[in-house]
Length: 287
Image 1 (cartoon, helix red, strand yellow):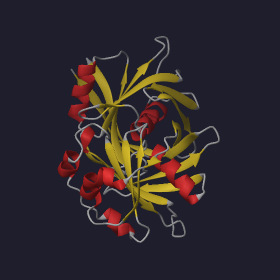
Image 2 (tube, helix red, strand yellow):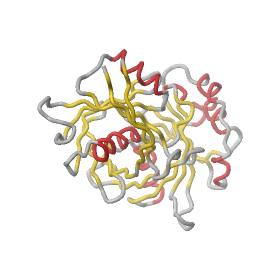
Image 3 (cartoon, helix red, strand yellow):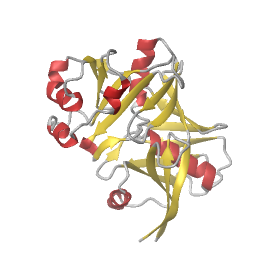
């Protein structure tokens, strides 16, 4: 059996930046065991598997597909950068003729529309709830050390803990943050959450005008630090829109690779997440 595989860097137009994802368009479903083995082999934060829903469709003419995402250890319910990469593979490499694609996923239908530069993803909005920091004090300490924290929130839909640094912090406090992800993982073993997002207010008056910054640590799903996390921005977009009083925002995830996301909160309670993707590898898995 031969399976086509592509590796794309998402939320960037430069190679070796953004977040790399592997994408495998499949003519037939595989066993879950094989999905896990392929994801472990690619060893990227996420590997996406696209399958046809209607056998009479092709990847060129079809507009509706099934999409699943796997980290090296876990299947996840929502993944932004691998959805963006999947759409890019269908549009760029397989020359899909439709302006919009729909992916059936564990998080419902996700629409991706081609635009002049990049793609717009229609995602659910996942508002976080403010929580008592003392309930998460060991995790907060492991994540940000002695940096001042403005508030702590939790998103029950996505099981992600959101730590906002105080506005007195400089961006260097976030970019230079060194997190022992093994120690971080050991602070939470009950399965309460799967990721810690550290965020801070941006500098919209300085070019290119980022409204907020963030980083993501997800050792609980086998990803010590995710370089650019689209799904996090379903949480961050909700939070910062309320704090900043803005519907349209420009966000930057300041991992060592870094990536940029354009956000727009919609009147129907969902969020548009836009970004670019660039292909860096194309090959075949032979089994």
